[in-house]
Amino acid sequence: MPRIGRFTKKSKVDSLCQGSTAASSVSQVDGLIPPSGGTGPSPTSSLPPFRPPRTEPLPAPQPPTNGAQHSEPPDEDLDQEADEVDSFEQHIDNQFAAAEALKRKRRKTTEFWDVKTIESDGTIKQLHLSVREAMKPPNGRKIVLRFNDRLQPVGNEAGILSGVVGMLGSDYTKFPICEKDWRKVRSRDKIYNECVKELFHFEEDNRTLEENIRRRPPGITADHWRWFLDYRNSEDTKEKCKKNAENRSKQLYTHTGGSKSLARLEEEESERLGRPVSRGELFVLTHKRPNGSYLHDAARAIGEKIAEIEQHDESSRLLSQNDSLAQALGKEHPGRVRGMGIGPTTSQVFGTNSSQSSIGTQREETQRVLLELQAELAAEKLKRKAMESALMCLVRGQGGELPPNVAAWMNSLEGQSRE
Image (tube, rainbow, N blue to C red):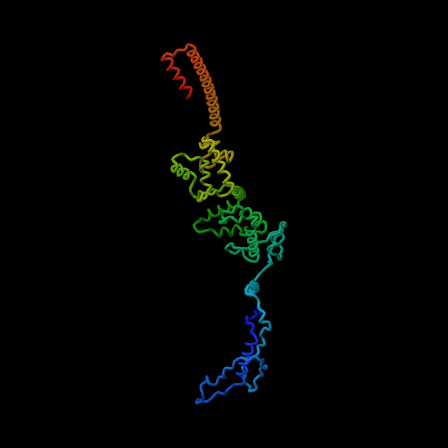
């Protein structure tokens, strides 16, 4: 750390003060009185008398000849530019710079790692890679990770894995910076599959079947454990796991119901509101946080669409294949009914295809009869209006009043026409 200049005071005094100081120093040198004995005068009487300052310049003081040393020995390490000091801000900056330099000197940095890689053709190579070089397009090359007996990554490969994960986590183009919980980051599985698994090779299948058989957990019989291993190693099971992982990655609307089933939530909400709850209302309820905000923009778009549909059409609250949830999400998937949990199927809730077709036919017939009745009612209203007009003209032409029974009949017709 470089030597910091010492703060000193500059001697800026007038000639009068300089003369006084010089006179005082000379008098102290010339007027030295050797120490007296015990019977001599007091120490105060040995001090030189006060002399007023003189206006004429005094000769330069001469070094003492009696060998007494009254000046400090010269400091060979004294900075010749001690009077020229930096500002306080510059002094603080220098202190910080020195501290950072000391940290960098003590810090152990490893920019390159000796790792084992496997090429696309299966060739094993030993390379000297940095984190940035490892993150370049691999072109079929992968870094082979090693694990200990607790399945934890170790070695230089684990170090470069940590660096890659750190750089990916700080890339805001891949991960949003507006999430408080890592579990709510939707892109983490995608980045893991597209980046981490493409850069690293996991030696997961190095245990043989015999080794796995010997690692049987306590409480499981040997035949059951062997059956489980055969089931997990079968191609059908591997294909199912791959398919399930793909389906899980496509799920857009993760709900907030937790372990409580949709059936329980529906019953509790119906009891609270005092009326049946629609599938659309249940969707909105299970896709909001406790503070009332939606989980993400996709859930907000569906929730707002459901609210708009139910506001304009009250019948969309009724359970059907064209209710508010079906209009917002589209056609139902086979084998299950959205918004009703595990158990109900489309045939149980909406009926079979034949029953659905018969219901549709009945609905069309009812609609046709309703239209005919509405047309007949409109025609009857027109006839009644015409009769009222004719009677009024007849009465006015005669200039008389209607009989009481005819007037009562006319009043009843007028009231019905208003209704």
